[in-house]
Length: 489
Length: 95
Image (tube, rainbow over all chains, first blue to last red; front, side, top):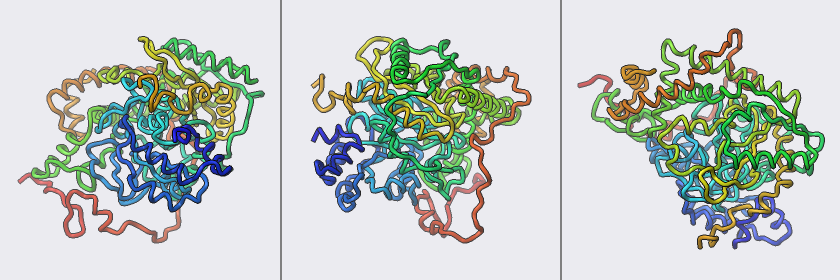
């Protein structure tokens, strides 16, 4: 039983092909595992799933999957972890989820997240925080924290999430798994609840790079229902590169000035040495505008959010409050009671930035910074194949540690936001463990690799070779080694 | 940096009713965030084209043909209140 939960999806597929694993048992085991969630990773679980999935088990790679609760699922609760959508059952299903179902992947459940994907710790969920499976006193990262924790803890073999400024990569790093943010436009966003439309992108959270490639292969494509989707030309195949010879990895010179925990820095340096050992070349690149990424991002994302979230007004779906007064009173009461603190903060910030007299100074200026950052990356990619950074400046922090300091929380997105602004793909792979700044048991550290737009295949190939070189899963297990009777038990 | 009056004005624009405590907190927090964000205000970006879309896209048009859509009763089903095939809302005019 425990063995099945340790298999990556690809390994399970191979075992099924070899007749060593029954597809039926595989699916049932995962549904049972999802039922043992003690981390608040799931907001809704598919109780009829294993039964329903049994019908389709002849599909050879139908490993069940966890879906972030930001994707609309017909007839199934979809809340984006907000009170304002409590009880909402959408009348249609997101294209990404349709693609999973069409590929024969049963849905295990909907995962917890920061409300409307706004947050880096999962503490902004209206339904309580997700706990980090490595240390339950710490956050799993966010906003796709439920998906990341579920994959890391053996509550799901793989999952999908969304990334606006790091919401797939940072929780993947904090939980010791792989997270990929594809190029803007690679995957349909139809039915994916909008946060910041010029940035939002769907992507996989998996045990390893091969599984991420399999999931991306299923999800990518042009969708007539999403005019911003373009897909990935030529599709995606399993990565097979074994070394990094002939590849150049750029380290931003500006990195040296930034506040990175010493443990994270050590793992990063060790990973650079591993790249060289595998035949890759390390070079310095310059991203002079990237340091303004956070400032630009925290204008653009809240501005777009304030517009996108105007639709939650108690009229067409979700909760309504104050219906005894006039229309405006109903709007205000519904929104004031339905939205959480961080969502209100960002709506306020965005509304202010877009208000008369401030638009050019904030949104206009931020969009220009964005152009500069994209140019920085183009310049870097003329000299190197990839740009690499730590995924986050720290390992997973403690629950409550940054809850009262929104700016400190925003700064945790320092390394992931520039790629989002430039629309380019970036992957986080687990690179090792490090002690947190204040001491305590070691926690996973993510290594981020970014590539030019639409270069997902090259990115996955390189990440795969590096992952094999690092051997994180060989050392620490593809899920957390002490779960289900570890050191505390 | 941002005054109490501005917070109240923006809350009105955003259709949010903030408690006294929320207003107090918002004044401090938004000021702190804006102070950080304001750094980009000092950059010389004269002549830089603002990013409208990160990947070059052509206009996406579809044929002007009727296509499947949600039946009205399905679209109305999640609404808090419905009446005669429409969304029902309180009167815009205070009684």
